[in-house]
Image 1 (cartoon, helix red, strand yellow):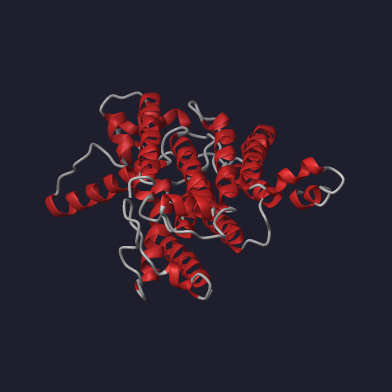
Image 2: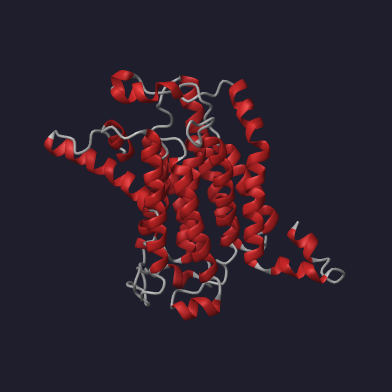
Amino acid sequence: MMYFLYNLRGSFPVLNVFQYITFRAVAAAVTSFLLCLIFGNWVIRKLISLKIGQPIRTKEEVHKLAELHGGKRGTPTMGGVLLLGAVIISTLLWARPQNDSVWLALFSTAYLGALGFIDDYLKVTKKKSDGISGRIKLVAQFGLAAIVTAFFLLNPAIEVQARALYVPFYKEPLIHNLGWATFFFFALVVVGSSNAVNLTDGLDGLATGCTVTVALTYAVLAYIAGNVKISTYLQIPYYPFTGELAVICAALVGAGLGFLWFNCHPAKVFMGDTGSLAIGGVLGVVAICCKQELLLLVVGGVFVMEALSVILQVMSFKVTGKRIFAMSPIHHHFELKGWKENTVIVRFWILSIMFAFLGLATLKLR
């Protein structure tokens, strides 16, 4: 649609606006938001008719948490198809199709969305909280990391820059050539971010709201990295192909807000692994494209908290036999400590906003 309208600029000069990334990013956000609002109720009704309800773990598995979340049983899941569909359609409408990084991000979204869809489908059909085995899921995620690595290292124009490791607050790369470790670093980013968002998706709207702030921040970072004047002024790596990623990030912002319309407490639909695995993965891919991988630890601070709480809980129990938290991920810990679900959600959203501000502040502190 962008090119059809842009080609009419000779007759209608106002259509020159379609050449600007900022305009198309806003258009993508509005489009994905409206798509979610327009088709949201239809998708929810369809999921209900197909009996795709969220399985809730038994009381033996989670004790008191089962009482708190028992009312969610049967709420339609796999709503990620709505969110991801809106993102993909909006990106195809508003991003430049010649840009390879856009296709890499879209492929990553579809790839992990399909993996999450299969996982959700198995959970629903078996009426259990167990879907694809963790080992198979990791193998599939590492497979995507291998594709992402090949995309960069087989492209002579960007291969040298891709091997560099940048850290917040520093102008020059900390390591100029990661060498063979590039794959493992990219895998850590993609797999880690994908699973971190998946772990965060445990309360109504929690992961969705945090996704909006992180995606908005990376829309700004992608635009800056793709603009030679701004990137030079801020002394951050310049990559001409990353500017278009602001469009897909903006589409994710709009879709997140549109999905939150139905996903806020009490949720009418859950995104499921279909949405959470894909969201985390595409954010990781965008971070790699912008060479702001480690900054994702700051901007996505809530996701990091959730993942770390699980890692620390498992390690503590294996080493000492004791648990650090009442339950992990950490949002459940606060629930079991007496916080209302809405309180946990809104406070974590606030933290996500503050982490985003902190991440943006690093752009000038170099």
